[in-house]
Image (cartoon, rainbow, N blue to C red; front, side, top):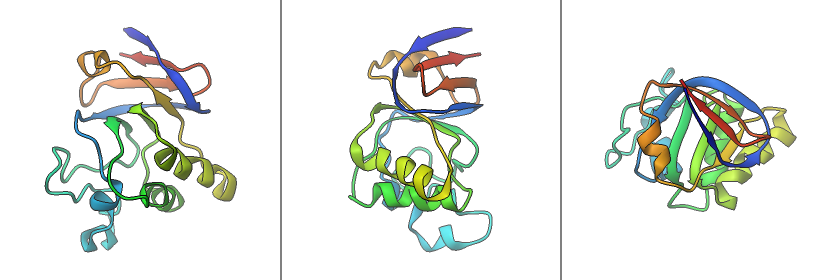
Length: 146
């Protein structure tokens, strides 16, 4: 087991399977396509330019470098959380205000929380791969990779 220490951004705990990419994610491009309206496909990444194209983020611990693109990022995350289609946790190298706002608003408006930890080193991507079991603590910033 590897234990990493990141910076806590949004409090909460999550235990689950990792979905990892070294590419930034454009949440608007990934989740605002007509295909995302179909039952069972709401959490499927529809950005054809992304290496996670076709993967579902629901119930995963999403590990990625940053959110890019539209200022609508937080609202896309909020919508996914409200619909029960969001990841259960996120570990991101750069946790900007637009990304974090979706999780914070969902906690206030819907009582749904996604913990977020910032881990700035590229070592994260050397330590964890897709389908690894990960436990994250958004209070302490501890990341356990099994």
